[in-house]
Length: 212
Image (cartoon, rainbow, N blue to C red; front, side, top):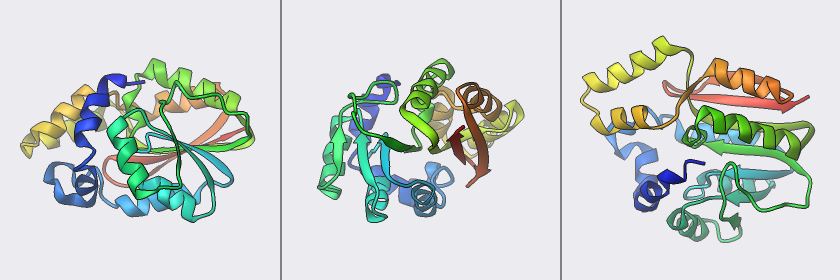
């Protein structure tokens, strides 16, 4: 699962929270409405929740505040350390979207924010298949991530970033595995989910999939 990006996130751990609140001009639009987006994701689930890509623990904190039982999965050692400082009571494990310890408990939901794009489309399909087996009927996958409506939308966003001189953002958009809605819709449907998409900012969409 995009473990090629772990070094990047180890280095980003200390400044991550400053980025998501808008202190990095290049990523201001990517994280616009950050707190509200986390709140929306947290409000869509109940019960025992797996969170992939915990980062510094911002979504985890909201999930716990709502009374959910949270199992955090995070591959970056430095991010895990930051999350533990912020949320000492969080159950936090080393793992990723495709590799997680065996959990002998009923899972009600799987959540993630700004992270699923670390997987290639092929890896996303494998991951969704795993989640279909983990969840019972009515179980949910709720992700907030950058997704493109179509190729034209992708090119427009990259071109806009280029015109603004946002080199780091352009490199990011070209390096990571941001995908199309149609691809995710087909994958979730294939694995027995009903999925919807809701735009939350210029980059980020809420992906809500319920096991049928």
